[in-house]
Length: 265
Image (cartoon, rainbow, N blue to C red; front, side, top):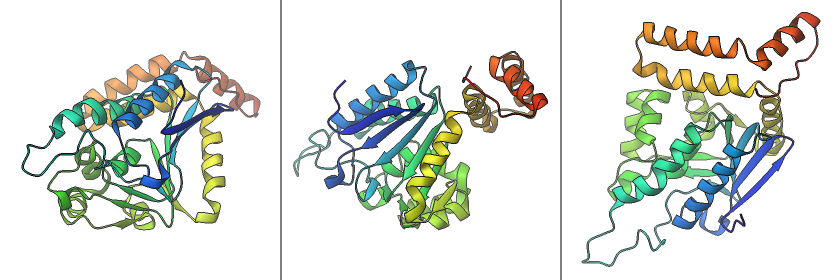
């Protein structure tokens, strides 16, 4: 597929999606949503891909919904478009695709991540950001609520008090503070950011892919499970993974005192 609003490339097991509307801070349009869904479907089907890096072109990661997109525009005095329908058609499928992707995901936040852009980053397994980056839940400024999973991700990551403050006050959260609060994995000096993203991507690209994804699934399920249910889930995943080629290779490498050669199976 030819992409106009994103860049997509795969090299050495690493798929990279770059939101590519830098003049609009990579804000969402319905066309960009469609391209993102198509790229994620490509990753899901390509067994050579072992990790996804999601980032933005230019000086920002993603500024959320582009309010100039015809899909959300309206004329004064007329009934606005159904925002719930837009969430159901665009944002919900995007987040669910990311959360259920067959490979681990990294959000490389290279600048402002606002509104749905902040939630998009939080939907990835690991979030690393430049120290000059920031996160902003701007919805209260226009009379909406955090969507794209924001009301789910924020309380789980930083607790109810901080989540409520971020959502109600719409204050910008610097990347370093986001890391200190546990919202993201790490904040990196801008000059070292590209190298750090590449190193992390390569580390995950040679890791036991299925085990990483099962770890994601178990951790996401935990808040809704009792301890007994979670122990049973862990047992089921251990039964599956304990007979996988990567586990057999991992044990052989450990016993042989050599680096493992995982295939992701």
